[in-house]
Each structure stands twice: as C-alpha cells, then as structure tokens.
Image (cartoon, rainbow, N blue to C red; front, side):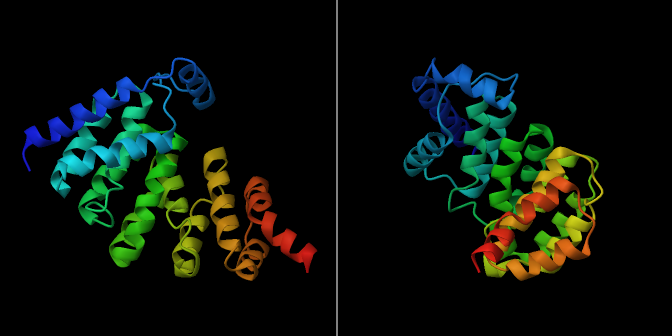
Length: 232
C-alpha cells in the first residue's frame, strides 16, 4: 500500500459521487437526516455499489482501505462521502479485521449521528464472528464510554447474529445503559432486543420481565413477542 494508491481510490470515488448528483433528492435527504452537511442526493445502496465497483478496479489491500476510508471521512464535503468511507470497510478484504477497530471507534465518535453508527454496527457484528473475545472487550468499553454514540454502537453490535448472539454480552451492555434517558440509547436497546426476539422470544420476554427498562425500550423490545403470543 502507498499513500498514492489510497489517494487514487479516494479521488475516483469522489469524482463518481459528484457525477451522480440529484439536486431534487439532496435537500430532502438533508432535511430528513437533520444534517448540517449537504448531500449529493445518492441513496446509500447506490453509494455502496459505487464503492464496490471502483474497488474491483483498484483491488485495495487492507491498509489502502483504511487509509482511503480515513481520507474520505476527514475530507468529507457531502454526507455520502462518509457513507462511502464506511462502505469501503465493508469490502471482503476488510471484513472481520481487528486492525480497523480504532477506525470504527473514531468514525462513530466523530460522526455522532445514528446513520453512521448504525452502519458501523454491521462491521462490529462481523468482528464478533471473527474475533469474539477481542471484539467483546472493545464492546464492553464502548458500553460505558463518555459518548452515547459509542454506547449505542455497543448495544447494536450484535444485530442479525440470530443464534450466534452472545446473550451474556448483550445483557451486560444493556444493563450498563438501561438507566439512560438518552433517546438514541433507549431506542437501540429496544431495537437490539426486538431483533433477537425473532430468534428467541422467550429469552427476550424473560429479560424484559426481569429488568427495569425505559418505556421506549420495553415497548420496542416486545413488539414481536406480543404479536407471537397473540397469534398463538
């Protein structure tokens, strides 16, 4: 990897994004996201596809991905620039790589909004599979971090893991945040439990019954559990 290769990858991504502007969609996205940073007006799935297609040509190694992601993130003029930075870390060469943990923490901390944090959570879910013990250590630290965005990341870090969910870790990070009055944390707790309820509704019901959760968290957690009971 050279700085030049990361710069070339970054430059092509930025040029391509700029060429896909949608002036009608852009202000709508900005208003929805309550973002001070403007948008090009490109849907996130298209940003991911742009990154994947460009990466096929550049064939970046892990170091290049990390450097290009940081370049895109720090130099972002539009919100999709940062979506592209996160999309780079979703490439196969970067999946489940512990070397990117500091980058994920940096982007979650400095991004400080749900769209970035929730996307990064998918990367942490991959790391739970690849390096469970090391990832759990990071997640436990985030669960008590000084910024609630890292706490949200910790709570959401096992989304879609289904039977692979580490329920002890899930319990630990939720208990560390169950008293929080922050909306984005309470919502995350409910979402994490609701998601796991598709796999183990009995566990989620027992968890809610045995823990004092914010009303928002409890309501979200039991949505599908209550539906299952009603159907039965």
